[in-house]
Image 1 (cartoon, rainbow, N blue to C red):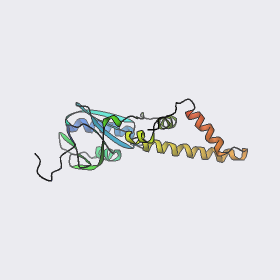
Image 2 (image 1 turned 90 degrees about the vertical axis):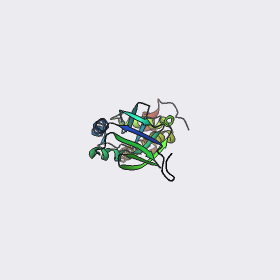
Image 3 (image 1 turned 180 degrees about the vertical axis):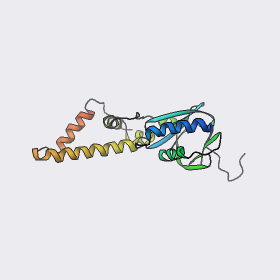
Image 4 (image 1 turned 180 degrees about the horizontal axis):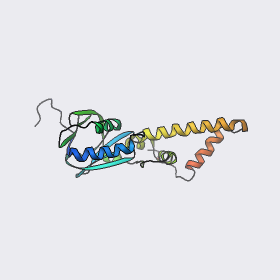
Length: 195
């Protein structure tokens, strides 16, 4: 029984320092030049999986952890550059913070069932926009991909504005460009859920 006032971890895992750092650095090499959004950590009873920036890695782990944890992927990228020396590496969630060894960062705990949307690695703009169109804002947020979708929408809008600037002398309106782009992107997709 913990002492009075002691915070009880919502989850606690131990992983091999070498395995975790090797996989983290491998994924960091893929995603560091791209916007990475949130990182999501989950445990299936045997392995800890870490997903961000459209990439994922898993390492053997032992302990207890019955939820998904969302935190800053930028923090994980930085963590991989200067990892601690503690082995095995203790990863735990206490009082709204994810702790890895002696370092911690704010996090949010959510159920595993809410993770529904994934973006592939090196995904193109059209695919990101289509994925964003097929899912509700809530699904995108819970899955940790809303930041990537929002950036893709901003890039779409920037490109549509450039098209308008070039085509306005020909009488093309912003509304006409929007109809064209929307039809090209989403014309063959089913209507997304409103959840």
